[in-house]
Image (cartoon, rainbow, N blue to C red; front, top):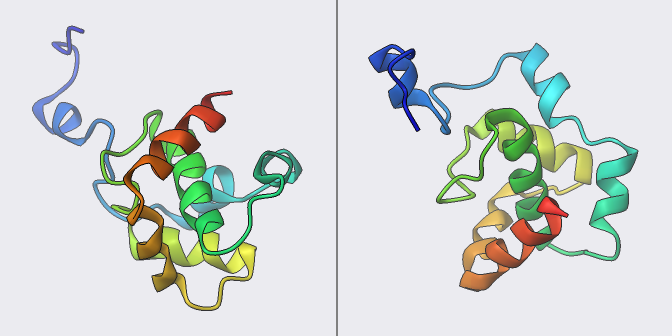
Length: 110
């Protein structure tokens, strides 16, 4: 895909976080709504945080991250708070089973 219309800085930042999102961006892209909770369905436990990070990161960046946990701390904390996850560090368990993130990406793609 040609990217000549992008500056070098824009091309380097495509599909990844170049800094923490603003509060407005958090509220727009990372706020979980009714449809998001419906998509969560019966998922429960520590894996829902990783699932929701993938979901909201896709919404914000337009792509899945190679490492779904490579998000700014403010994003992790914002999503964890909505899910009632007291210790956001549990998200590290999300990548313990390598295929989980790929399976969840398929669910999110719908």
